[in-house]
Amino acid sequence: FVYERYGLPCFADDTGLEVEALAGAPGVYSARYAGDSCDAEANMQKLLQALIDIPQPRNARFRTVIALINAQGEYFFEGKIEGSIATERRGTAGFGYDPIFVPTGGTLSFAEMGEDAKNQISHRALAVAKLRDFLLCGK
Image 1 (cartoon, rainbow, N blue to C red):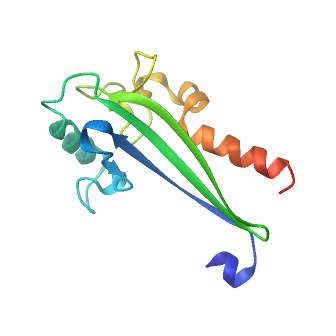
Image 2: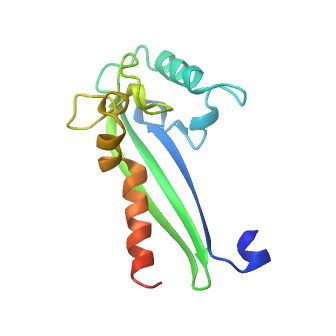
């Protein structure tokens, strides 16, 4: 709408948590997994309950896609990080599913890492880096 109406380049992003044992759910419904009026705590509890009988590792990934539209066209930039879902929430930093997501090769959940460490490796950081590189190349 913004591009069509005003001719200005614009971008938007969305992020989802994809859990292998749940055929990729909650995916694009991550923010409203437990219902439209629910919060992050309800979403985590629903996910943990859905996985209660699934043994570790409970493989998952965070995926972010940024869409850009400008005069040259439409472009998409993806960032993803593989990991697993812990059996219980751990840590107090971050938001959303951070307390139950443990990146592959690590032992700490995103919520235990702290923002600086998480932002070095996160799905969003990877997608934003791709967008930044694209924009710096003069596209």
